[in-house]
Image (cartoon, rainbow, N blue to C red; front, side):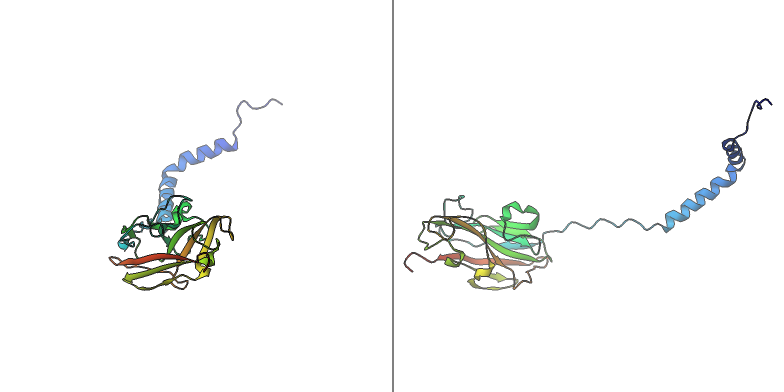
Length: 217
C-alpha cells in the first residue's frame, strides 16, 4: 500500500493549535510573568562602603634616635618600623602586616602623622619593631625587649609595656644569640576586645618607647 503524500506530525498539530490560540495565550503568559515578578524578592541594595571619619595621631618624637624613629631601614637599625591600625580579628600577628593590606585600616610611618580610621569598627594597635644585634642587647629574645605605649583622647591606654605574650615574632635570624636580628608585632588589643572610635572622635598616641636588656644587665 502506498504511503500518503503528506503526513501530519505532532509538531505540525501543535503549531496549528498554538496559531489558533496565541491571542488568548499571550495575555495569560504576560499576566503570569507579572505575578512572578511581583513575588520575586528585590535584590538587596549594596552595602555602603565604610567611611573613615575618626582620626588617630601618632607619637611625636622631639629628637631622632635609632630607637624612636619610624620606618627604620630594613635590617640596619634597632627601632620602630610602623604603627598599624589593624582590623580586629582580621590579621595574623605572626606575619608581617605590610603584607596584609586588607587587614590594615591605617598605618603610621612617621613622627606626628595623623591618619583617618574607620569609625565604629573594632581595631587593635600594633607596633612593629626591629631589634638588631650586636646592639647592646644580651641575646635576641623577645623577653629581652619591652615596648611601651600610652594613648589619650576618646579613650585612654595608661602608659606601660606590652606583656611578652603580646609580642609576636614574625621574622628572625640568629634568634637566642647575640648576632642577627628579630622583627616583632607588639599588640595592644584591649584585653582581647579591640578598640573603636565613633564618628568624629580621635586619639593621640602620646609616646612609644623601647627598652632592651643590655649585655651585663
